[in-house]
Length: 96
Image 1: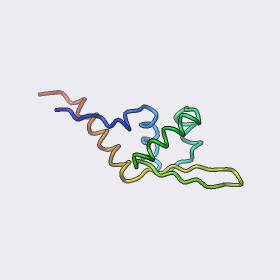
Image 2: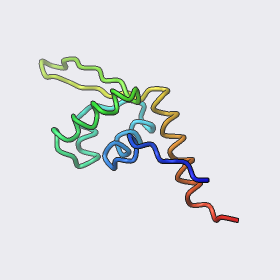
Image 3: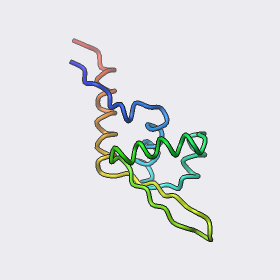
Image 4: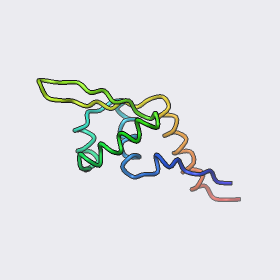
């Protein structure tokens, strides 16, 4: 029997964010915005949903008097991503 896909990660933008963060461990908001070709507003909403799920941590600070938002993947986020990939792979396996 096939498992359900994680509804948090099944959103295209949230999956893209987590996929990027798994590779780099942390990234600035502007980097994520550029890489996902998202609007700032939509990215903010999706990052907040990932934070609420415990998949990422958000650190806000200032760099040269400009606000800077850093997103970091958590262990929970890495595990959720690995599980999501495993479920997708099971969907793709031929049934016997």
